Image (tube, rainbow, N blue to C red; front, side):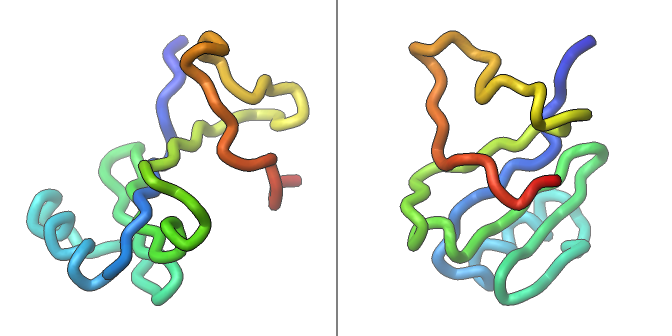
Length: 93
């Protein structure tokens, strides 16, 4: 069974400017539109705009996959040469 990405979070510096192209591209309003996060749901994919990403050291989008049990998951399914962990897992139960 293929594994699909559940969320792609893009670090942005200006939320108002960043969300305008997504509104036009997808033809929808965000399902979350807050100062700390803007999210668009397109089919089964969530696209997030994170205004704190750059401040936290992010330079590229982060991808999140849905999992049944985070305790049994490996940090990355890709070969070690193509895989890196940005930060330790937190905020999950």
